[in-house]
Image (cartoon, rainbow, N blue to C red; front, side):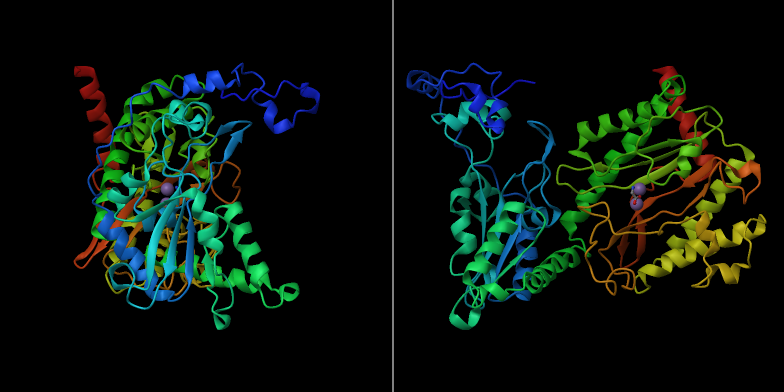
Length: 528
Ligand code: GLY
Ligand code: MN
Ligand code: MN
């Protein structure tokens, strides 16, 4: 890649700070004449403003809900900074999901940005709420500035045009302000409410700089700074993080559309993998062929992957988080593919199919596969509005325990296995059957247990059903014929008033359907 530069002021480099040496490979002059030349005679930026985003009203309703919970307090929600991958190369930026949810922003918007909900007298805020929202970010710099041509992290010359304040204001229906005003906006009038100060709540651990700024402001304005208990304040902050997580338990209609977009692209990605399987079977790292075929779709159709793809063949399929994907794909093995496209809005699918690498299940593979499918169907049947989230897991794992008992693998009775203290079946199915899904693959993770595992299934919830059975090569408790077989079937479910809808139903689930789907893709390719 190319590099930004910053000539060191003509001094010897021995005294040059290390962080500046990254620019030593560049030869950019520092003369005023050069700067003036570089920053002049560019056409002005386009001034036509975009339309309001479809998400804007939904994001406003989310902010209004949060406003109702934290009257009189300043709420600070950072997007997070760029993260270094190595030296001066950053990871592709992705904002914090709570920030994305409250602003409606997706894609790579916007490093270092912070949303502030500023308290105002009750009922006088945005949409009759108790706060006014402002988005602080680093807007596009003019083409007559040094940032334009010299800043490799934010300059238009280097990374393309970024949004202006007016653009985001129009798109999001949200007041915007320059990031230079952020420090004041976070720290002004902070203090104990009894002496007229404003208390802050912050989504912590997203941006270290903002954490430090808030800590310093709290310390400097505390009545007794030497005895300030930052732990107590952290607990206040955690309530905001928890509320943002719980707000996402129910998806609004716009979010459900985004989930459908993510799942549709994921379904296409799985078909691409089937097309790539003949090549994967001949490659020494066939799992990487599989991973790459899916990733191409994720980048073409969406923003990214929602999580690292698990492309696991044979015994690797029994390694739950096998993301190294360095293995071969051998004919006669099962390939477990767990992958999800993240849409431009940052909503992600999370789907698993277990495919016979050569297109046909062996008898023992089919037996294990069908047990997992029956467990998934039992989970689906248990998922009804009004039943508990945890009932899905109970229903699915009871089926698995029954099958393991039938096959003589379970060392205890089914009753004992499904008792709280038993759980022997977990040797072969050690993970949960379901999790909420949305902006994060494991969405709503900071919600209270009574709203999550013990929560009631409600229309608008989106979650997975993903039972599996994993028989490792090194498992001496089972007959050899089972070893090296890992199966998971994972679907993305939308709960509606009429019951669950399988958003990923376009991908075949029954063993026969999987075989004929694969055969159909190869036939189509032959005739193309
Ligand atoms: N791919 C992560 C999960 O299924 O939860
Ligand atoms: Mn999952
Ligand atoms: Mn998954």
